[in-house]
Length: 144
Image (cartoon, rainbow, N blue to C red):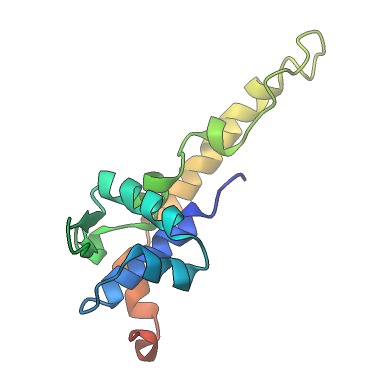
């Protein structure tokens, strides 16, 4: 499956924002913790904001969850930063041979199964909320 690192980084960022409520969580802070570039974090913040999962205040750069952690599922986070289309997750080469009985049928044979796989992934990720994972986090790790 072709999933980028944006999903776990977005989850990482939202967990930090949820757990460090009294701290001004910046893109630089998240980048340092996630081990990536602050520009990457700002791009992810933009996607999370567009999906109403993140609130970013101009000026001082304050961040907060866009809704309660109990209302944000892993699927919400995934769908905000990744494609939820089976055609995007599972890339099938576009130039398969139309004259070959296999090449001409690969997409049609695989598509229903790939769609089912994405539906199963959505169902599983929709069962878990950010709030649940905050509760699972060891409380001693919830400080900077």
